[in-house]
Every structure is written in structure tokens, then in C-alpha cells.
Amino acid sequence: MTTSQERDEARGQPSTNYTGDRVHDDLAHTLSDVARTLQDEGSLEETLDAIVTVAAQTVPGAEHAGLTVVRRRREVSTEAATDELVHEVDRAQYETGQGPCLTSTYERRTVRLTDMAAEDRWPDFSRRALDLGVRSMLSIQMYVRQDDMGALNLYSARADNFGDESEDVGLLLAAHAAIAMAGARREHDLTLALSTRDAIGQAKGILMERHKITGDQAFHLLVRASQHANVKLADIARYLVDTGDLTR
Image (cartoon, rainbow, N blue to C red; front, side):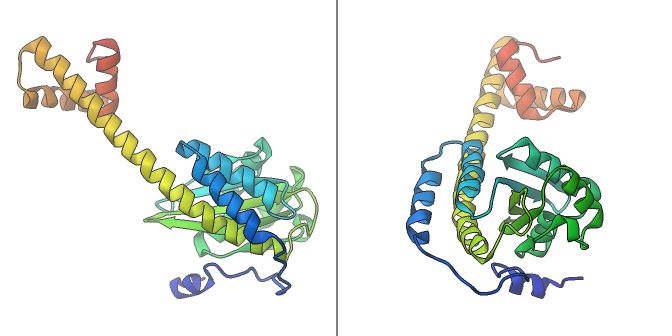
């Protein structure tokens, strides 16, 4: 069992396969282009799609890329992927409860899987991934947002397709991606909050005009309708604004 201190010490560190042969070449120039690309994206979804697309194109050895997110240490999902194969491989990890992306996410460290056919750390997952045609993977712990954790995952159909350069580029890319993702998520949350406030305000206005009641009374009507239907207050408000009806 990995302790909290060990996880903190491992954060941002190379995997156990790392040999120390660093290759930089035009890495700084490439990552500058990556940062500008991510900054230019609009919505949260567009930013996530850009992250995995850039990762698949930039990290040496990567053929596909995906973003795994764990919310409140329980709800696991693939937020973005370059191919349906990524979703299938990730599903194998989530269903078996094992695999490099889960280990990378929970233990907050880089994990390199060199050959799926010889892998013994995650036997159930490895068999399923091998059947799907994936032979090697690289998973990098990407960010922590309160109780949410994530990993940037790279996939290849060839064994031993990720080396030290892959880790170097992946770690630096993940740092840029985490900043872009955090900014996009804040903007998304703010936009959603404003949209929710506007919808509730419009719904209250409709009820106030229709029933000649106060704003507080209109709000309580919305709350009761939300509780009765077991539907979020914002959704009830939007439904009323869109249809003029408070019931479904």
C-alpha cells in the first residue's frame, strides 16, 4: 500500500522504467506551440479534445490518447479520447478495477507498461487490453482538483513503444494541459452558474406574472416542483422557460 507521503514524493517523477536518457531537441519550441493551441480553444469539451489530440501527435510512441478522471475517488470516466479504442481499453480498466491509468491516478505517479503480453501487475486488465490490440501504455498523473484526480493516458499497438523521451514530453505536456484544463473548467462552471441563475430568474418571472405572487413565493413553487419531480431546480426552471409548463 502506497502512503500519502510516498504519493506526494512520486508526483511528477518518472516511472520505474526510466533510464535517465533525456532527449530534448526542439521540445521547448514544440511545447510553446502546444500551450498556444490549448489557450486558443473555447469550450471545456474543445479543450479536452485538443489535449488528447495534441498528446497523440506529440508524445513519441503514442498512437492514441485519452483523459481519465476520477471524481470523489469513486466515479471514474474517460472525459476525452482520440479513438473509440481508448474507451474500450479504459472500460476494461474500470470494470476490472486495475490498470496503469488507475494506478497513475490514485498513486499520483507515472506508470509505463512496456508489454501487455508479459504484464503481471494487472493480469485481468492485461488480457482484455491485449485482445483489443494494445501492447504498451504510458499513464501520467495529470492534475488534482479538490477530490478529483486525473491521468493522461497514451496507447500503442506495439510493445515497448514508450521510452524516456515519451515520459519527458508527456510530463511537460501534462503540466501545460492541466493549466489549460483548469482554466477551461473554471470558465465552464462560471458560464453554467450564470446560465442557471438566468433560467431560475426567468422562471420566477413567469410564475410571478402568471399567479400574481412575489419572487419568494415563485421560488418556493419551483423548489416544490423540483422536489416532487426529483429533478434539479435548474432543470425545472429551464423546462418552464422552454415550455411554459411547470410539470412534466
